[in-house]
Image 1: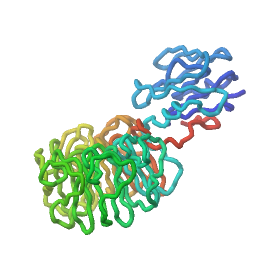
Image 2: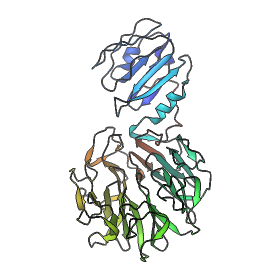
Image 3: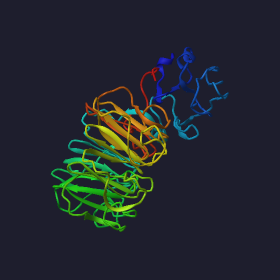
Image 4: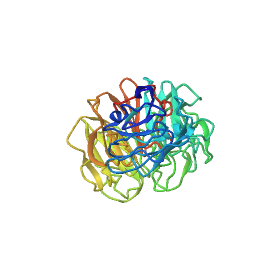
Length: 481
């Protein structure tokens, strides 16, 4: 037999693993040259090497001896059933995979193997399935929700019932939320989810310890439950780490519920609320965004307001004083879009300049520093920014030409630039100019392209990247990784 008769397991975009057993090894060494590769026979006692090339010495037709890496010297001999250990590219000290195989079969024999593949973090975009009709996506703490009109899907962590499946089972594959086929927008939080259905009804499910479902209860809900009877909800603001919710009803009233320990609901107090509470009497609110413990909102014709925790200057009013009711940020009325991370805020002004403020330890403000700012600072000099999203400690944005840019914390590869290095100024993700919608989760990122394909990257510890539908094997060697 030749190498081409043996399948290759695709572990990550940078890694190959070649199954060979009782084979003619001719050509194998050449195939793995200049690759981050591990070759295994009947048993591996070692692991995937996170750096360096593997120069292999293949001996003994029944057992495999692998020796000498660029930075290590390890002898691996094979006896009995295959046991393979892999290391994370993001965190080389973390073992991700331990699995058993029957090497004579073309499919893995271990559920653990498949689950580990599904849960490996990614530092560059990888497509979720093959569908081309995704319209909206939202990343939460450790789960993701997205809409294929008119249906809703969710995946990842399900400890609070946030997947809407009437159970508490995690899923690394998108699962349809079988409750309605009229979903128009979706918002993923910290173990809970909120969605809007046509013609404007509001639904919530998942964890509710602080009343964040708005259902006048702190009891978790495993299926979508309707919040009140109104059908005039237009937008919602939640954060992937927090449990506070703000929402706007037509014609522009602002409502809040959930955790209020820093006054982030804007109710002039610090009491939690388990059902929607009206914030003031103004009817000109147009959009709202939530950080972990602060909120930011726009009023027509474009004034900017914020409230809640201000310990890092995330309210933008040049102080670090907390506020439990809305305070205006500056006097401009040219703000057009807002987003919030855990402790930082990002906003776009007409005609398209980008501004940020708040916590900046990881460079998430994008102004080439790691210094906190308590008032808006411009990100670069471009005036063509069209969309922004706040991750936990990173920021995602689109330019008018459809290019995708990220910056900030990158420990899990959530910036998508094939590194785990933090960046304090915008860095482009790939070269495509077809991105149309972005979402930042606590440690992951999602984006949709113009053809309706969905892509994700970053932390995948609970399967929140949705890669479970991907086959773990291919039927022929892949050398181009």
